[in-house]
Amino acid sequence: MNKFQSKSFQKSAMYALNGLRLAFKSQRNFRKHIIIAFFTFALAAVLKVNIVEFCLIVFANTLVLVLEMMNSVIEFVIDAYYKNKWAKLAKLSKDIAAGSVLLAAVMSAVISFLIYGSKIYQNYM
Image (cartoon, rainbow, N blue to C red; front, side):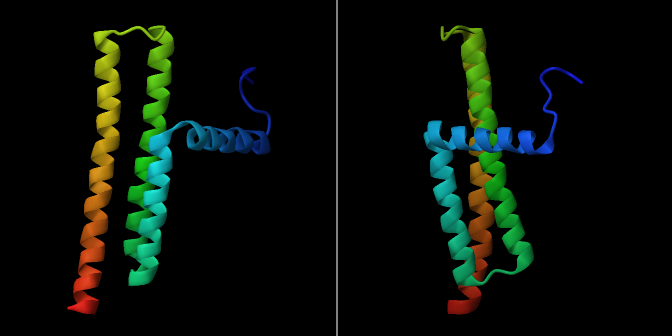
């Protein structure tokens, strides 16, 4: 066993929960995405979406959160490697990572609008 590997599932889960807590405390955009996700889940309850639609909404929102966390990791690693100095490669890497978050967020919004739009149209038009 590697000296950096956890010896128990409980410790691994605690490390993972600590990572989520750190992302929430230190990353403003992560907090914003969490708030947006809760609003989308509340709207899903109000509009009574079916289970498949709800799973799509949960998946899309979770993907945004995961990519936001990965974007943060990439930024931290690049900053550490380049010692917080500007470098063209660092900028390109960070921009691409941020672009992945933006792409997922747009996709999540489109999925939500399509689902909610059809529900609103069916129920209120």
